Image 1: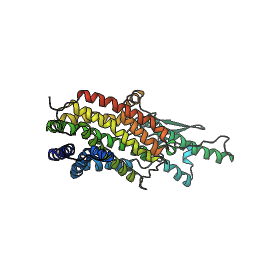
Image 2 (image 1 turned 90 degrees about the vertical axis):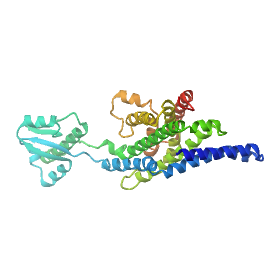
Image 3 (image 1 turned 60 degrees about the vertical axis):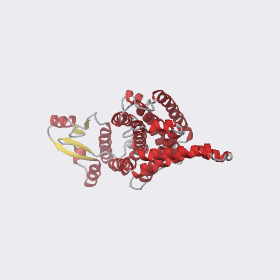
Length: 390
């Protein structure tokens, strides 16, 4: 928001309040309520208009996060079993005697390359050139695979077991007593778009809330706008309420755009029955993130330092809160740290209602925790807040 627009809006609100206090006729109770809210509405309208007119702000707040969703959604759209590379050492009859139809089925899951040197083959598996090595020792087929990628190791075992079952059936004419059913767990739980959408939405909200609150507060202090407001009839809570209202509108627009893109047939996000709970969730989740921005704006003196500190907070918080990738399988200390960050609860709560069929009882504790976090940070901000530069 520019200095001229802020000063004009503040002056207009102050004049209206002065006129209402001096010469205005007293109205009914509902008219008095409207008068109390009019400064907030006017300031919020001015902030919204100034934001919409700034094409750079619109791009970084609305378009840029959507581009990330398009990029990551396209990169991780396919959720099928990973294609594996297998090196075959010498003769392995169960593979060499496959029919053309059987070999076609196997090549859909694995590319098999034949070599003669077992030591060289093992070396290439260790170095990651191949995902697994297979050789035959009598009637036993030996599979060696790297422990670095358990998913591809499981895929190699499943593919080889399927081939062995077919070979046993052909040799004996009877099916084995026990059979193997291989199934990819991820296909039945959360697909990439289902955690990418809540995660990137949380990152977008965190970026816009923290950066805008911090930079706006520092700019208003440096340009003496806060000092003018302090001397005018307008109250500080009215300025804060207007800023919160403007930010709420922005995050609701962000949420609508994210859901609109993610539910396109190309990406295929399937919304659960209680998806609408994401609306109050993101509104409440914005408050602790804004409070962090206000805290940064209270302890910094320049826009550069505010932006740097905001970046230092938002980027690690996004990674440690599961915005860009799932935290499953990460070290325990990473997950412990993530519980201290409000963005984790926004991301997990959004995933719960958008993708997992969660209801109100699942997100109520999350909302309560975020409100409590907001109260603590706001209390700290009030102690450190300065109307003027030091």
